[in-house]
Amino acid sequence: MDFGYTPEQQALRREVRAFIAEHVTEDVLAERGSSESNTGRGEGGAMKRLYEKVYERGWLGITYPKEYGGQGGDRMTQYIVEEEFTRVDIPVGMGGSGAPAIMAAGTEEQKQYYIPGLIKREISFALGFTEPHAGADLASLQCRAVRDGDEYVINGQKMYTSSAHMATHIYLMARTNPNLPKHRGISIFLFPMDTPGITVRPLWTMQNDPTAPIGTTYGHQRTNETFFEDVRIPAASLLGKENGGWRVGAMGLNLDRVGASRYLISVRRDEDIVNFVKLNSFDGYAPAKDPAIRDKIAELWIEAQVCRLMTMRSMSIVEHGGNFTYEGSAEKTWAPEHGVRTTEAIAQMLGPYGQLLNGSPHAVESGIFAHNLQGAFQSGINHGSTQVMRDQICRRGLDMPRK
Amino acid sequence: MAQCPVCGASVDEAAVRATTGFTAHGASEMDPTKGTRQFHDGKWVYFDSLECRGKFLTSPETYVRAS
Image 1 (cartoon, one colour):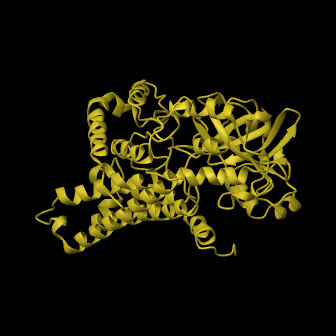
Image 2: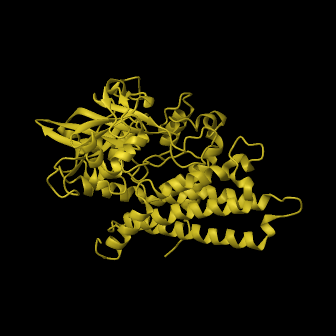
């Protein structure tokens, strides 16, 4: 087993870095933090132009088949490209469980319509899973979809639909048969956000801090609750089989956990901390020479390597067509908790100054460490809490009973 | 007017449902200060705040009986 990079992969990394140095210009950086920028529809158009160039290079949708607008490439190539762009806080992954779920369960028409659009960032999904009383226990959801001729009629609501205010479509989980056991009466639907009957209500959370430096807090600045009142959609909006949505949704979520994103969330955080420790001294005190700090930094580095190796293993399993089940749950537990430990460690090193947010005259490094500390906890909750992930490891990985 | 089943405040159902703008891709947006609602047992229940809805969801039967 070779854990190193091939000469071709090393050359790719250099090529991506050169591209970033040339094309991630001041106007891109200025636009990068806007709420629309990740979708390539920022107001100034700089992000859109950048994404077009990234697409021309073949760096969007790398692992997706060519017939659907992808590159037919491997996950390691995707990983290298994503890692480099993460360092400048520009996402180039597909971002979300919609695309893998469509590839796994969609009709040919759905693949032809959605996958190229998702790759070019012309289509984006809001994730309509969580409800006010159905988060960790997602299968308790009450949003209803009732078949009426060639249509389904949706009634209900969703919570924390973070992209609802800027998404083109929604990837919705709804109950189609309330008489079946709760995991079995669920289906998934894909439809446009401008379908009549959809209402979006803004929700502001502690993540909504406009002074947060770019890339520090994980997640959108705004989230939403979304209401569906007699929303009529074509029956062809169904993804997979009716009442088979739980399996499709879980598969999409699991595949979304494969790859670089969980690990890469921590890359820049970890590098920022190491660079800060190495480059700063205070009245003759050099943190890089402090045995306690060196010990902690080394411990965090080891944790980061565990995270990276888990990522590599998951990618390898999927690349070889293996049965990927609990491995994503292990990554989804380890990476966010590593992120929390990392941000807590730097907060302890910096003392009270580590708590000061951007805008304070005494904030360290524009408050990046304080903002990261706030944001790190969220990643242990969203897209499946670490508690749920642990349960999945026991059930799917260790063959333990449900209760 | 509906009555919040938790605190008893009046909630303007029409205002909660009213379109006050549109998202980037055409979904209706509403004013979050007007209250919120919950799809419960096949019908909409209106609340004057997220806090009241949160209390309701911890024990819906308590508040449904009381109202």
